Image 1 (spheres, rainbow, N blue to C red):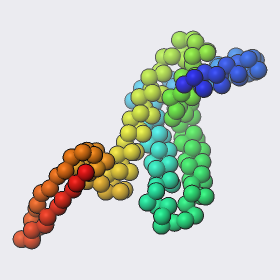
Image 2: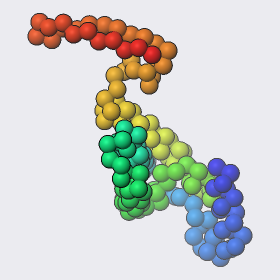
Image 3: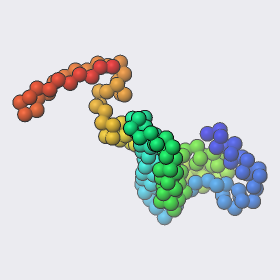
Image 4: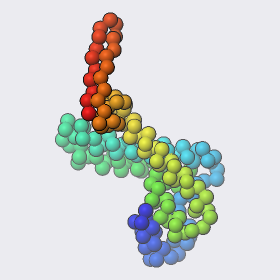
Length: 171
């Protein structure tokens, strides 16, 4: 957050006219769209970005594909580009709470703060959903796994078609 405010301060100090003309480079949500649409755009945009970051940098994937660390920036950069194209008309493309709040703090006008909550709530929900999706769907971790409950040990059994299966999870 401090870095975003300092960066906006540098722009304001070095480029006064563009800073004023561009409204302090603040993200302002378009009035053409409902609040739900604006929030959904931030959630979905952040979800895709965080999902691609997790997928491109997954440690298990690196062990299989030695070229992944070199190529990881490519899908991440393309995702940032596509998310910007999709969300700029709707919200100005927040997908980063600090990027949205830093310029708003220096611009300090009501319009910059009206929908600021969207640029915090949307990315936090989107990132949380992407992390959960990656852990529990892509990597298929069970709910009682070490990831959620590091000090818990669980055991149980179930039967499928008359066969008894033993399942043990330990932390």
